[in-house]
Image 1: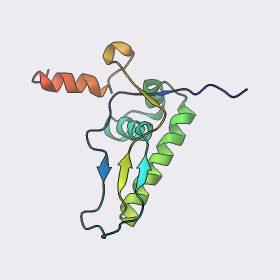
Image 2: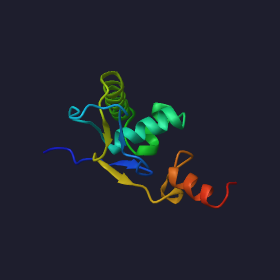
Image 3: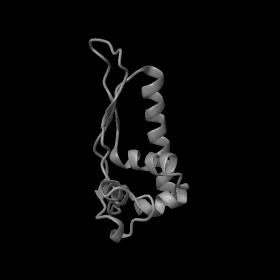
Image 4: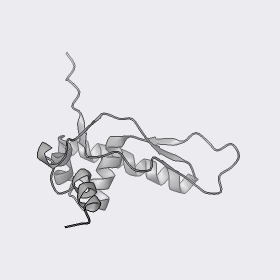
Length: 121
């Protein structure tokens, strides 16, 4: 019997989900698709300065799972930059968190969004 899928906890969807070269060809090649959970791993590790272990805890998965997700995400980013391809962020195996009370910690983007809308802390 197969193991049940473990959803990756994600704090928010990206504000922008399509990136690419400004001088693209009339018929650009197929876009590269980065999943929402790959985006979340990059956001937590590279933007929020989490360790892979902290990222794994935040996303509710094993550290080895985060290592794989993060490696795939970085490969896709590199492919888009080096070869001038469009990068789309969509899909994946994720579940949105309910905010800081849902076990989310310092990297919860929902907490930051609420704080920013009230004028900061």
